[in-house]
Structures are given as structure tokens and as C-alpha cells.
Image (cartoon, rainbow, N blue to C red; front, side, top):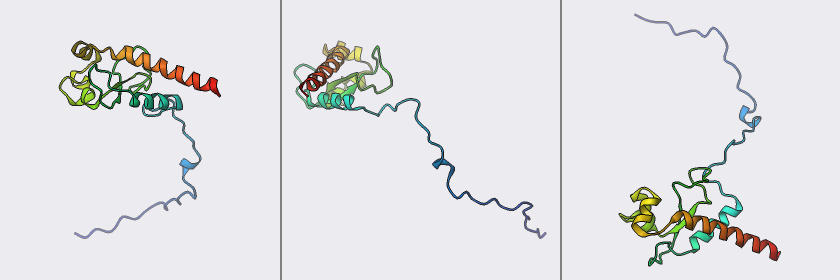
Length: 135
């Protein structure tokens, strides 16, 4: 049995000359977790320049964003970071991420990452204030 092709009853609409998204400007309500302002970037650079927080380990550090902190704004709050070498961060069996919490890491290594993060954030602010007073 042969069928006839479907016939359009209404004509196709013309496309817009300009896309609608050019007219609408959306702004984010919340900042992204990866966004850093200038002070946080200075802080992360300071954390990278410090040695690992574990005693006896002088490895090059990467910033560890604390999993639980009292005043965290978002998942990767850059204020709550501590310097850890990659081995103590997430490579070895007794690293902070493989243990699952900063509390277990403190019990295993005797290092309070929360206190270190608070101390380093205060030191960064003092460093920035001292730099501003020089100018």
C-alpha cells in the first residue's frame, strides 16, 4: 500500500536575526567552588610554597582543602587549606583522603589540619596587611 507524504498545514517560522541569549545576561547567584579572588590566590600560592605539614616529611606541598571545617562556605573553600605532599594528600594508605577524614589523619599522624589551616589563613592576612602598609 502506497502512502502519500504528510502535508504541512502551517508555514515554518523564520529564524531570529539575533539569538535570544545575547539579550539576556545571567549572573550566578553563588560563586563557583573553583573561583578564586586575589587574596585566596595569594593564600594558595603561600600554601604551595610551604613544606608538608606532617613532621619529618619535607615534600613539596599541594593545598589540601579540608573536608569539614566550622565556617566553610562551599565544598572547596580556599580559606581552609593545609599544605600536604601528594603522598600524604591522596597516594599512600594513610593519606587524608584514603583515611576519609581529618580526624583519622590526626590520630594517625598527630597533625591537626584544622589548626594549621586557620593559622595559615591568619598568616596570609597578616602578610597582605603588612604588604598594604608598606605601600
